[in-house]
Length: 431
Image 1 (cartoon, one colour):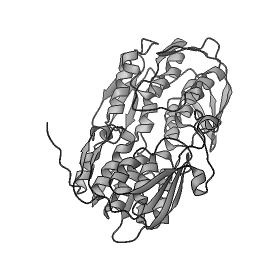
Image 2 (cartoon, one colour; image 1 turned 180 degrees about the vertical axis):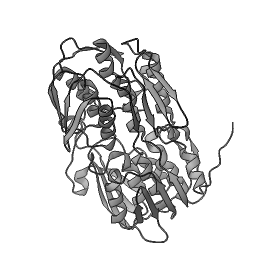
Image 3 (cartoon, rainbow, N blue to C red; image 1 turned 45 degrees about the vertical axis):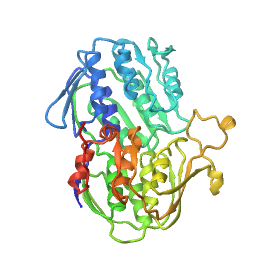
Image 4 (spheres, rainbow, N blue to C red; image 1 turned 30 degrees about the horizontal axis):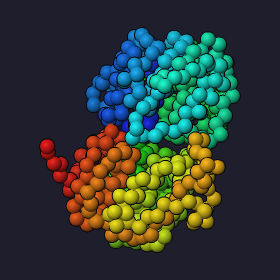
């Protein structure tokens, strides 16, 4: 019970940082979460001469005037998935760039072909070896860029790679995520000519002048869903402050459908549950404006407490149900099956998935509830699944020992402290 002030969105600020490198003037970002992934990206910026200074707890000043290298050091850049978004700003400044390939065994990033196709469509020369993408933009050309499936980071890259290219560029089937709107908003504040002319269509007219700007990072919609789910599974009462309602409509619809009580007042969302039974549901995970992938694991956990059979069908990713092994060890009844096994049609958004070779992927979690979860020894190896395991431990009978909690702090600002402030009983072992 209590209240939480929602932090700024990680997925927003990690694209705003490279965007700021277009300008030789100060770009001031507020509501920036102080998390490891942000600090890592700032190290990448500094490695090529960019300025990045904290002013106060959550305000960041960025400036690209001292960027002095088109080559991002491999030992630094290869650790960050978003290093690739520096391609556009560095091509703008130098006409060429060497971007290290992302190399982290514990995280499989999405297919890279969407990035390569965008660069080639814009007339960039693209070469690659084991460690680097080597790009040059001697004769860039405006273009019509169309994605077969909507992609968040591919949309980021297409915006950052075309905002300086002379002429009009149209990006079709662009992502509708609120974080993309943040990128558009910052670039407009910096002087770029860019607009969302349809829900999934962006129009850019390339320019060469980028000024300083002030911009507030949008709230983290994944954090909203996570703490709302915490109230549900622990039968609690939580107020979330600083919520952007439009960004969480589908999650609120999910809560309403399963019988959770909630109310909105301006930018505050209150979620509570006492002894009400939760209703089963069939959830389809899809890109915005659908039920987004970041909420998939949270919905699965919540539905382990619903009365009856539920399904969660992921139409975006083919490999995001690994956490269910741990939930089942805790007493959940979750079976990961192919869509056909539960009467659904397979939908493959992942361009890299070979349907002919691998057959229908197991992208549906079939959940039988309610399940009484019990405490277990858990290891968090992937930051994306950490929060759901912590919430499971909080609603389980008995104590749980969790190793790797620090991975969650890479994703959510002060996550454990916020839980403690809400009354969660958490002890940290020293040594």
